[in-house]
Length: 640
Image (cartoon, rainbow, N blue to C red):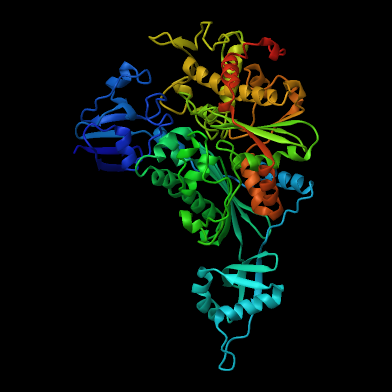
């Protein structure tokens, strides 16, 4: 069997064997070498670039690798066949989606303000922001020859006397440490407990001395990225926040490719390990280190994710989600503990899922709906979560309906040649001069940060500006010539946002006609879903009173530009509100408040789910939306 050596820019090497004729990408996956492959290995995205250092590596020709680059040794791992011993270099950019773990600076009021504001607004609806977890200080008499009650009964009796509970139970983890802790602390301890009605469950027993914290974890599992928030359940204080790329992305940028991968032999475990072992557990270690808290002191975790991510995270077969009649294994469950799926926190910590509504409308949307408060308002509101899947909720205090469309990963930088998620180095905003066609960009990060790529909000701006300045036509094709516009040998046009010397990478940052086409399809999926959903209840766009936009598309969207390209309805700008990562904020609310958790389940139960794939008119509507801004100009009267 051929030997393959992977070399990394930080000096590490990984050596493995490969079946002769197997693809280099599959060899990398089997060796747990992280190489980005949003298209799941069909040669479409061009992001699994590696450089051959020794040996021969037969590979198909592709538009993603120029003749010059091919001669230099550059290959796409997915379409390269291992036939002999080789060495390949894996550039940092190939695994950057996974390595860019970022700890938020909680000294910045912007990082915490959104959660405080959400807390105030939810409390304003009458929901009490209090959970059932508490620290109980318990004093007991030490046993003697005259008092031989066993330790567990002694603790249970003391807790009953203190709380008035009719029943007190404790976990196996408590029972294991109980004898030693009681005697070391002279029978004066603190208990981490949950009080539900007249029952108390004890999760942990701790020394009374020192500052004990009841940790809680809110997690937004997105298809592209994962964000975690650590809080003190007793006080509500935010202790730490961090984000990272979803390790599953190397198995495909969209949920369908991941479901297909999970159905292969050993695939479900690979997908679960990618999110649990490679993504969430390292995030937990980082935020606990940042907050100076042991992971075992996290006693509750709330997860907001789409239906597929929930299944793969829990290690549950997701294959039937993509097969008619599209039935999930669960919409809601209360039976999973952290230890069941390998989450490295307190073993008895319950995993609380924001409930799913349909195969493609998940807990991220029910959590976001709670935060949007559209359910508490009389006006008709549209809630839009823009990620790899576009999910929509429309309604008011009387009714709600929801649907999902496959927007693809373009909003988070996937399917875009220089795309990336909204992190340091991403171009998040762009203006282009109509006269000299020169760009003026804003980059996420510290002052002087050079661009690395472009995120969703930057892509919206760039395409809108190219259209506004007449550089591209309604089909997204370049119709002007200039210094920054160029065409390859196949005639495909592109616009250079930053030349190599202006950028942080080793190539120009540009947006191509293929990128524009991918994004037009993504925005077309969103707007056509809005139209179909409104038409299904005999509403039209003019009846929308408010639009709440959420998702990891960037720090904010230029709504006017989004309207110009036909992504959002052409209504007054004042009606649009960007509410950030509402999925994480909703998970935070569930974590903080038992009543908020109940409310989210209530909202999920009262949503009407619309399956777009079952509506014949959807495809015609989608095709009509795949122009700038639309084939029906009357829908966009403000776009001139």
